[in-house]
Length: 75
Image (cartoon, rainbow, N blue to C red; front, side, top):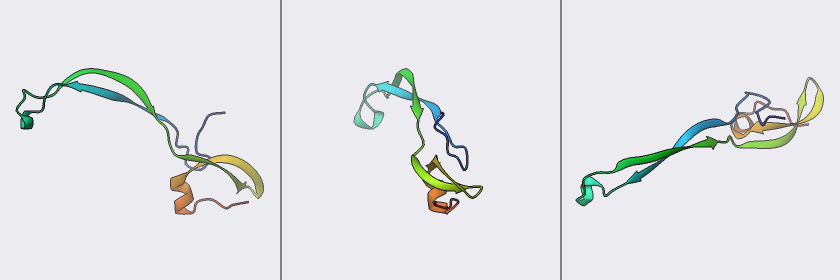
């Protein structure tokens, strides 16, 4: 099962980690240079909860944004 929010469908996103090398210009150097970048994954803050979906109790993953906004009804 994919880890997605059952309410809004929020899932993981991809991004990069950028590695820089050198001394900053403000500190007297020639500036920071990008040496390499590697891929990484940004995971949403999902919580496993028991909520009511179509008047039936189900245990699903819900993101914290949906919990704070009150989009769910707890079982």
